[in-house]
Length: 358
Image 1: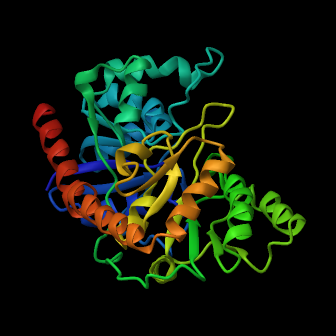
Image 2 (image 1 turned 180 degrees about the vertical axis):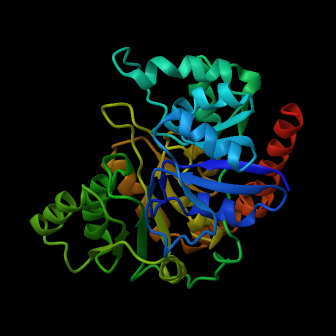
């Protein structure tokens, strides 16, 4: 079986369950993980995790020793750092971009930005998680024919469809994601304050950790929302599944930050849709590729507290609409975001590149 170097500079942050899912499902090649920093190994156990040396010459020796035939660089920064290695070994390289590694604004002072055009010339193939990201990559100078859209897949067995009570009182809204500015959770808290004026028995639960946590806690205390809004921090994946099953609406009001940081297509929305939750989100990044406005959920402009509140209230008051959107969401995830199908597409890319590298 042919060996590939699966390079993630940090193996593996808690939010990257989709990468771990791919690794576990790959069958047609033998991935060897190389990382500079190893973390969360109990959560993401994998047999072959090797330390990635700092110097290109040492990486070349490590890859030769293990008879690596293809490099798969996860994130653009890994692709840029491995360019000298690719050239020395004369083997193909696939680079997967995921979002933050392709900034909206160029800065000639940043070495990474200067080297991206070189990566686009030398690399054989590039994957992106959305059409929105594909257009960004083209604007950065990547040839269109080298780009393949590869949606990150969801484990449909782990996130089964759930029938829910058609209630209008005591409705639970849940949001899941890293507590980062681009997730827009502070706008959700502000909007939920307006929701409670009309539906005081509703609840909001936000799952995740990050630098925005303190700010969110201050807002919750300031408006005395402690009884209705909870920050749960990070929870295990199995507990997340249970929480989604008990929820009625999913909300993630993502936004573009001042430095141009954007989402691709958030996996948390896919997981929620898999369980049959209707979604309230924003017209941001790749989200409209996943959530059709009025079909699987309601999309509103970024940073619009008023429209966000209106979207939540509309779903709270219409259980039948929630059910319809939830069924539509599950059907879309089954069609386009099934993890098993996506890994087969990835294996097909590997096969084509390995054929070229003979």
